[in-house]
Length: 162
Figure 1 (cartoon, rainbow, N blue to C red):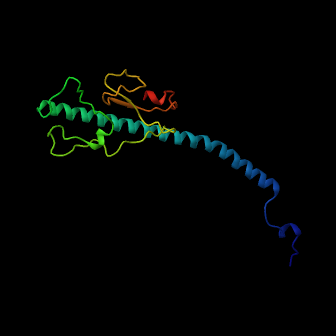
Figure 2 (cartoon, helix red, strand yellow):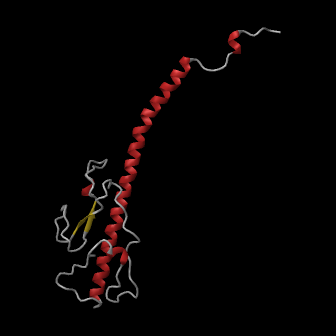
Figure 3 (tube, helix red, strand yellow):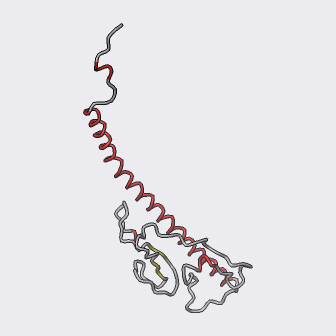
């Protein structure tokens, strides 16, 4: 039988192997973390675009239903009536538009949240009489919404301009 040497009885890794492994892991982490941060930000931007699209479509659908009720003489339009909802809540509480519908027609199940809103400011609102880039709401109706975040998108456009 052969006699075993001291080196063949030892198990484990050397300090050099351990340091090389740690260096490789550190390099991989340094590459993966920035990519993960950009991915999270991109997903929030997609969520913001989707929320804006959903609410804007609901506002437009509300206006179309109002105009249809006026055409069918279910509602008599006042001079100050624009046909847009008075508040965002009107989109999910609904209206029957003077009997145009036999039920309260709702346009949203809930108001989506602004994914870029970290301070709890909520959506910014614009009425039909406000300027297209106004940052204060006239209060007459809800013609448009925007993010009140001070952040800037990956494309360089401020979120409030989306």
